[in-house]
Image 1 (tube, rainbow, N blue to C red):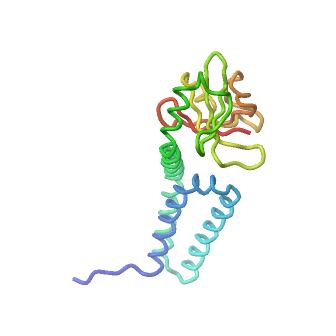
Image 2 (tube, helix red, strand yellow):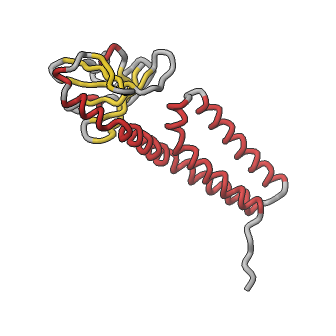
Image 3 (cartoon, rainbow, N blue to C red):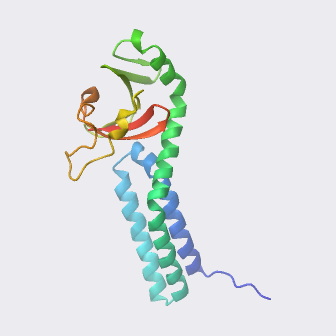
Length: 199
């Protein structure tokens, strides 16, 4: 019995959604590299998908167009999971690269100055009733910045992004002004370490 081979249209209908998931997984890393590329890449990829769909409809490749529609719907459904997974992997990879230095700073925080650096890792210590340490990452635009944050109380986990409108913060009021910035969102990396974004 002869096996039917997928048409070019069907291959495109499979490749575009699969490529979308791969792209979504890499968006956190791309955003840290250059945040301005993120919308450009996403809109370009969406336009490419619409062009594929238009070509399939013009050539009356109904099977491939239907396949693309189904897979695009599944891709939209999986987007939050894949994006979160990609961010988690990227944050963990960044953390692992400097984990030993982070641990050394945490262990000797009482004897260290409030700001400094060890090798390529800089740190900023907030000496409040609970000592928290930020390790700024080389990312951010203008007054927006990100850091790996050590918080033994895990209280920074209350920062879950904006509220109903910009300027409406979800972080506890006593945490918003940490390190002179407005704490916007934190995601746990491991243990008491978080990836936090500030503005």
